[in-house]
Amino acid sequence: MKVLVLYRPKSEHRVAVEEFIRRYKEQFIDSQLEILDIDQRDGAAMASLYDILQYPGFLVLRDDGSVMQSWQGSDNIPSVEDIHYYATPPI
Image (cartoon, rainbow, N blue to C red; front, side):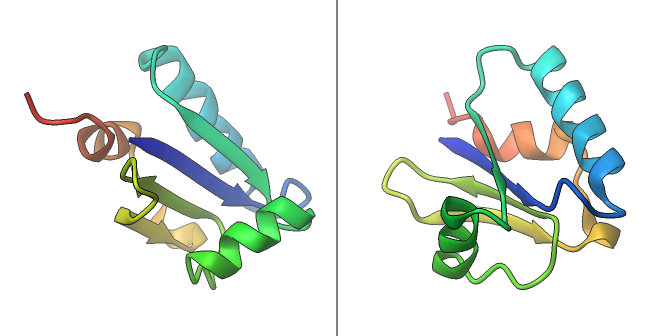
């Protein structure tokens, strides 16, 4: 599983997203977290690929690249625990 965060670092949601990233990395050290700027080529391509229309976008991807769960928009920022729940494979 992989967690993908798409956002604009020069935006009003920057602080909330960077706080989420900091908390996630502190709590779940071994988790994979990919952070992309949607104003850069790779970020724009991923946003297009996964139909992310509102920012920030948070996606939990299966190993085959399919979306397991997603959240979009500054009013819909998930908790780190929600992301980790979906990103942790069942035992």
